[in-house]
Image 1 (cartoon, rainbow, N blue to C red):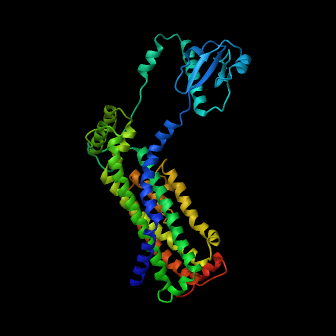
Image 2: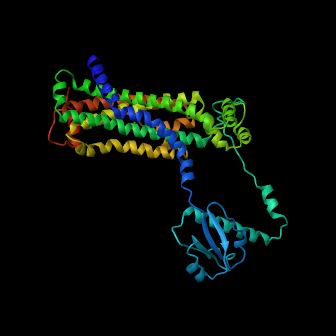
Length: 443
């Protein structure tokens, strides 16, 4: 254990003192917060200029009802279609509407003088559809139809409660959309860490093998101790980096959130979090979408965040230990990264498969495929973290963890057999059959 602890300390200190580690640790929380604000900023700065569109309406029904806005400005013209296309080149385009558009809705054409956009075309289609639908409804001769439609229009907001968790009246409602988004984000984090830090172990072994450093080290340290030291050392780096990210994200979010959100919105989120108000009532009072308010209440729930961080660390460590043992075995059996790619493929396929299944968890976290892939150790870290925010039974989480860590023990035992032979092999890329033969060698 003393040898392992020395190697762990060396691997840890070597990596945390790198400028790249410090820079990524500081910048990642800033990037995460920037990504949250990116959609609004992109929408704000990518708005184009208002496009002027000349309208030739041979039906006489649509043009008077077209509404100009920030995206498009409509103006009718008495020119013929050919004349308008030749003379109105200073306009963005010419919109021609056929005389039989009411019975033939496809008789609409836009002649653009520049590249069009999906948003503009959708805007035009929606407006024309609304006008034609209104004209068709007039045929039923219903008086004051617009007022009647406005009065009967009803939006239903439904709250979901977990009756199997709490039957108290003040229980907090849950949002499937928020749970699915959080689960997908956590699954992506696990996917990235397993690939990045597993490959880091493999790269370290390959570099030391090429430098012939391993031949000197194993003269005083057992190959198994060396492999475990590398795995645990990089694992400590991963845990420290995640904890720093959590602290920075929570800290920066706590400082920034009050300035971005109005006081009444934050108060409503706290009321929803405590169960004093339901999301619909609080959202109506704050004037925001109930799902947005539920997401804000979830993000400010310290107990919920701590619970997710604890599970994240447990599955991150277990998944990393499992895969890093395999990556270390691959690194020890080859001389360069190019040769490692073929042997690395069977390792990365389960990780990618787990990420794909994690995406399907958003549709149904309790499906058979989601359950089994969250139990199988090779995919459970990614898939289970995608399911946990949805509120699954505790026994499933504990069973998944037990199988994951038990598989790590078995995998380390097998990887160590490959490692102790592979670090002394040079000049030849082994086949899978040879790797299986190395695992059968007696210690």
